[in-house]
Length: 243
Image (spheres, rainbow, N blue to C red):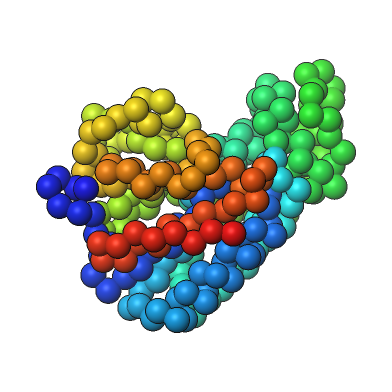
């Protein structure tokens, strides 16, 4: 709900929003195939695919997921790819090895392996972290780094705001801090406030998609469950597509 009425997509548009992919290229390909078929079967004036960040880490094919997103092309659907906290952590590691131990533990080691860099899940020795940093810099394609550094933190369409993690309740949407959009959790998830837009997000794993009054949560733990989730927003309707 937005105020006293149901949230609506902009007239003549449809939005497909996908939760956290985390290196599962197989699931991304399967879900995009379903989305393209849906768009063909149900033509709309303008279709947008919004990916909510966390394309890398944890799953086995992070580099290939980025390739797929960069190369995405469809005459029927435009892509809006947003930043996630895992992309932010990888970019920080390129400049600061101090974030390395946490990033590796939460899936960075799988991302490094997808680029051909042998990496342990646990590493805190500066020499090891510098080696991993140097190898990633040498193996990371320029187009991947450009893609990651260019990702916006939010997208607005109709009565919906799309972000990776959520928003800070009580702060105007136009004044939200990027760190909150990528990292916030409990304060946002516990809030029952009307934020002015229904916030569509990933970041926090739930067994099923969460279609709440003020937010829609789409992280269904794809890297572990095999369930990658998409919400389809059109007029005042909300429906789901899943692998």
